[in-house]
Image (cartoon, rainbow, N blue to C red):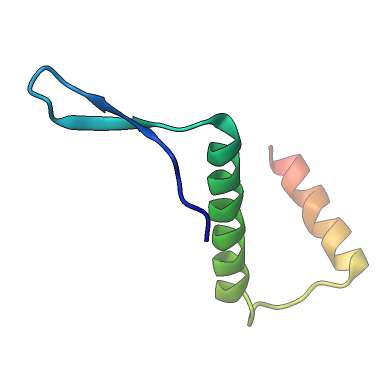
Length: 67
């Protein structure tokens, strides 16, 4: 596991209020969180009915008409 090298932002009372990290580290964290959330969503919907191609097309066409 990689360490996160950040710089603390402190207030006038020397209390830590934020952390500053480089954009590359932020993007890695963001990708990990998105992947985790996607896996959780997939697990929640494992038992949902699967649509075949024609059913999926009809479903998405109905969504487009509704909007």
